[in-house]
Length: 141
Image 1 (tube, rainbow, N blue to C red):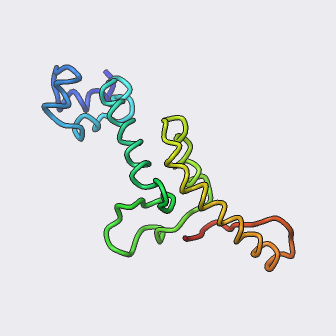
Image 2 (cartoon, rainbow, N blue to C red):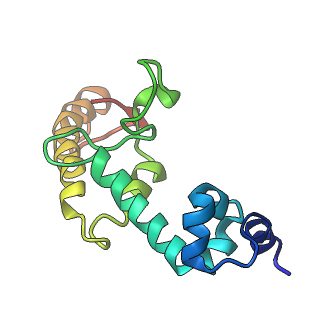
């Protein structure tokens, strides 16, 4: 059998999908990894909703856009300094915003990028004598 599914089955035995989550909880059901999730439509829906929750709760309205840590970091010292990495990481956090019906979650990013571009015009001119705008790999609010 599939080792990923085997890990879940060791937790849950022969329970049905609904019984599985009620009796052993999501953490145990997720132990099987991606392949186990693909076999469980209820678990897929739960993970989907959790992803929507994470984006909506960290980026909405007039807030700052989500960063690599989110709003859940303990204390003031965060991994990656709690800053914004202008590489694929930031793009990936917002790829699904419109597709999953959360365009409001992308609004803080749109506002932030417009301000970054405005400041980036001065940076491009002062640092490089160039028209347009520039932003470097890492930045903060």
